[in-house]
Image (cartoon, rainbow, N blue to C red; front, side):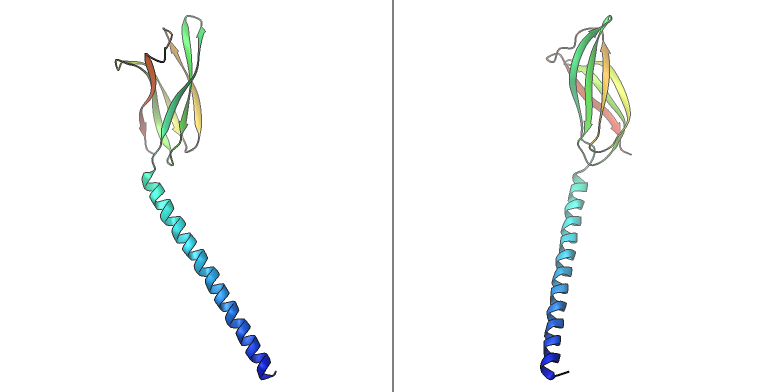
Length: 131
């Protein structure tokens, strides 16, 4: 092999080594940034539970208040207590959900004696347990 050809092969090898090193450094930096971001997000975590009324229907001698429960947090929740609370703080009814994973939702129904008006009652998550 000629000297010119050997120099050409060496130059190409060095360029390839630099390219592989640059790509490796970029991938490693991206991984570190992602893990740091994930770590900060995890600290902000916990379950973020939101109870929302869906509809009210008169059935039999009561009113059925249909609602949904969503977990918009990054952690799961267990033994979730959702209640219908009057403005004076009195708990009218409560239902317990066993488990709710992040990003999921469940639906439930409260059966009440009187028609629930939005200005007199609210839905509230009263307690939950972290798994």
